Length: 193
Image 1: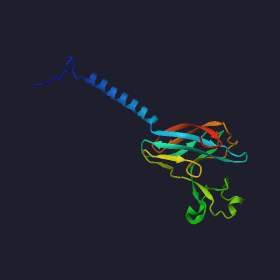
Image 2: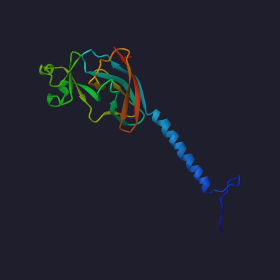
Image 3: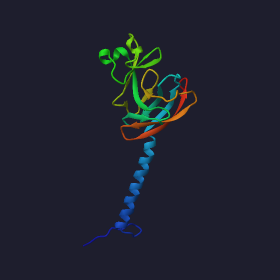
Image 4: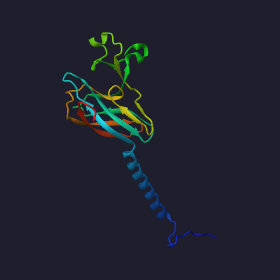
């Protein structure tokens, strides 16, 4: 004996009905994924510090809160803002392994930045702050706000063609290990917002 299932309206469960249901599920999943990607990161207080006329580097700061464990692995800006961008941390010089600087690290003394190997670096630097690239990116634990701020984590803009001036704005694209990216509007300021 063969039994056919029918709905209260008398319609069967044929291939056309199953195809319609499958399409509805795919559309719903796509919409949920699109909605979710906008909410994965809350980024607040984004700004860049003004730079002296002769400076070739600048810094961007912000607070990032992630809805899932992730990692900030890269960032970029338009070529007219900087040639390259790195994710950095600032540490006390004494906190560095062997007390020596690696390639790509920079030192700060009295607020001035000098690339390693320059004349300023040859002087004793007890208590000086050193910046180094986070080669594996910046860890973003779920639900925790990670502060990118002066003297801590920051996005480093390298080889500035022009100084960053108060009132300037530019877009910074953040790229995350999850494959997500987010564009953040950055305002250049003298102090944090």
